[in-house]
Length: 196
Image (cartoon, rainbow, N blue to C red; front, side):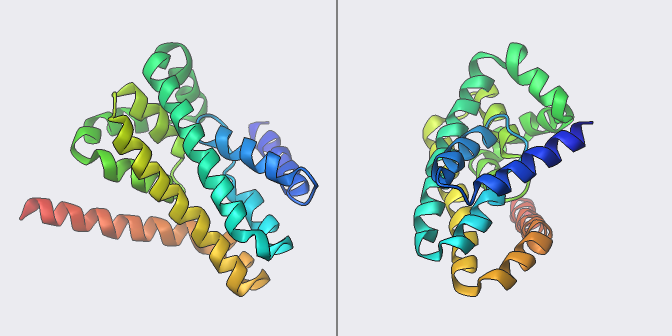
């Protein structure tokens, strides 16, 4: 039931990405995805950049800006309404255990957790809400979010701008695996540095 709903939302996002209000829709989706929406804005960025390559940087910039704003909204949810709002969201998506693990690591790895949560396929909403719940520094949170979301969205826009339709297939098939691999290697490197 939930998967059918998510599939319908996904199909709707693909459809509106080619409409005249695509930029407005991208802003709304990018904002919502950072705090409670299940589907990432990449779903809209890919067809929008392919349809209008000259607007690639504008599309990536808008997605970044809206995503960071939405991240602050997620932060507010976590900070002021964890029990009332955040806990049910985590329970709904099955992220409660992830949040409990996150709390333990957050103060040691704060900026890196926000950064890698924003750049990888890991649900960014977990990071934004959890950051508010643990009272993360707002400046650190904001700067890490801008860099992470910017790198992610501008990289996708650049790859599509440069390589076009074949890159779409590659991104959709491999981006999640590649970023998780890169993230794992980098975190492993940080743990090794911390050990020595």
